Amino acid sequence: MFSLFQNIFHNRSLGRLRQMLESLRSKDFSLQYSLKSLRGEERRLAEEINAVVNLLREEEHQHERQVQFFEALLSTVPSMLIATDETGAVKWMNATAVNGLCGFRIPHLNQLAALHPDFPVRLKALRKGTAQLLAFTNERGEAQKYSAVRTLFFSKGFAYHLYALDHIETVVQQSEIEAQQHLVRVMNHEIMNSLTPIISLSQTLSESLTTDADLTTSETRMALEAIHRRAEGLLTFVNNYRKLSGVPLPVLTEVDLEHLLTDLRQLVQRMDFAPQPQFEITNNCGDVRITIDRTQMEQVLINLLKNAAESGATKVSLTAEFTPNGRHIQFRVTDNGTGFAPEALQHLFTPFFTTKQGGQGIGLALCKQMVNNHGGTITAQSVTGADTCFTVKLPR
Image 1 (spheres, rainbow, N blue to C red):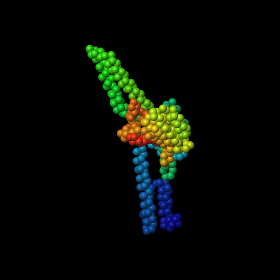
Image 2: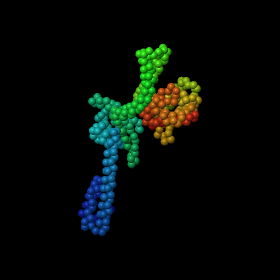
Image 3: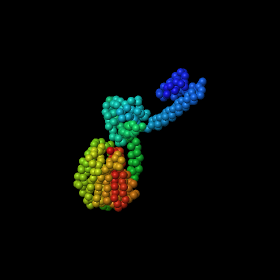
Image 4: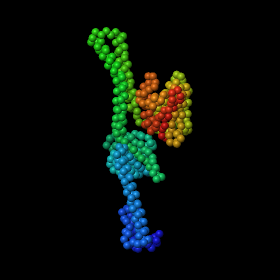
């Protein structure tokens, strides 16, 4: 190849070609081959070289525009985003991460140890796809709390990790806004339903004391009892709402699945129902350990088993199994009870919605919050008078 160029180009042209090749290696596409005094095959070859350089220059400009577009787009994301390779070398950070962490772009995740010695280790130990709480105190004694999640992605055959962090205050503020909006709607309905009869009865009693209205002792007692009941109902409602708004983030540990199911078998055997259903708890996953908050997930599954037993079912089953792609483990709680009507099914996880007489409507709402905090999902399938199945799906 070198001899070919030597035959075509004179020494000056060859030097120019070498200069262009060096520029291309350094991704400098500004040089062009001069066509002056070139003729025939020599000129055509120079034109081909210039065309290739122009094509590379345009592709580079297009790549730069794409990078600038995504940089601008991701700079608007309120979360702090850091992308690293498998070794922890930082390949990219958005502006939010730069400003919110060190104030500059770090070359390696280990440099976050300047904020706290355990910070890089705890980031790398994050369970994939599950939001977790990272809390520590910095050198100035200030409490630092982050909601953090790690995801894995692949590019050109290489694996990369994307870390997303949010100051917990930001998450809490957004959650508080949403909770307050929902609270206004719910409280407007529930509190007014309680206060209206209380005000009416109180006014009647007040008028009986200031006028000659003839209220018997029995009528007075009934009015006071009604006020007492409505006031207790209002207090119960407020306490239930406090439970819903106070669900803690899960504390994840490795749990032996079979041990968990064995404990559940023992717990349901001690429960009394009328009628008493036959419980069947099956492990189709074998000898595996799962990463969960044991207390919370035990509460979720007990609540689902209890609801199934209270539906009038004669058979209640809990099955643990892997999803077809093997990426999740799921718990299916099935019963042959009365089932749910379609209009009720879509509201089962709505706070304070209940189909039970005297029910409070917070059990399934609490279950949903706990499962969501694990990065999982909970769904229900049912028809009136047929089997009902609740499915809790968690990442492995």
